[in-house]
Image (cartoon, rainbow, N blue to C red; front, side, top):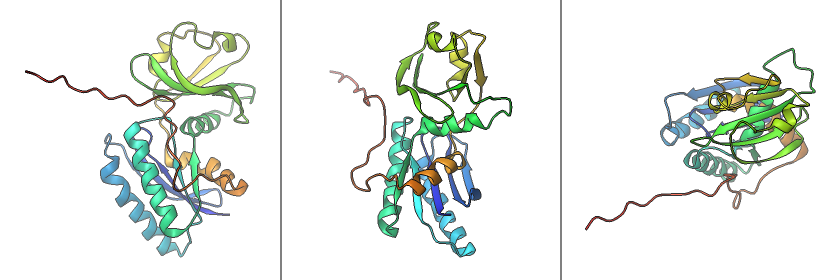
Amino acid sequence: MATILNIETSGKICSVAICSDGMVDFQLEDHEGMKHAEVLAPFVEKCMEELKRREKKLDAVAVSIGPGSYTGLRIGLSLAKGISFSMDIPLIGVSTLQILAVKAMFKSLDFTGEELLVPMIDARRMEVFTGVYDFALNEVERPGAKILDENSWTNLLEGHKIVFIGDATEKAKDVIRHENAIWIDGQNPLARDMMALSEKMYREGVFIDRAYSTPEYLKEYQTTVAKKKF
């Protein structure tokens, strides 16, 4: 099995994890807010020290590519590209929504596998980045930005139990009130949650371009410019 360094910087938590043989060998997390630019490089350095201590060779680096924080995604992808270039190893890009979807699968032994998975990432106000997946991670609805209201996913909720997960579930519960909605609150994507996806992509040779790959923002980044005062 491959040894993969996983990097997750799409949200509030900055995390890294070394995974091999279906196990997490080493992990580090920072829960103190958006300090990714400060903590990520030292985290990676500690990972490299741990690999040396264990006498293991890194086979690939995987990074969450969005959607999520514009700045966080750029920081994670830039460092992952640097590692890929310097060590001449493959670069794997993992969807943040799929990371959350996989995390949801393992949250309950009561799931039948017939449920649908809706990961959602807060995009401010009543907007979320989201998609709909089945338990094989097939897209039932393509990922995109969505404004939440009382009619969100009603067509799917009528015929399926839907598992909602992510940092936007609290506000979603305020408007989506259906007996088939299952809520998993307080969950953020973490590097250790990437293991199953990054190992699968490595086995299948699904890599992204070291030079030209970009984060999947799902929405055009917008900035505001202060008006000049005369």
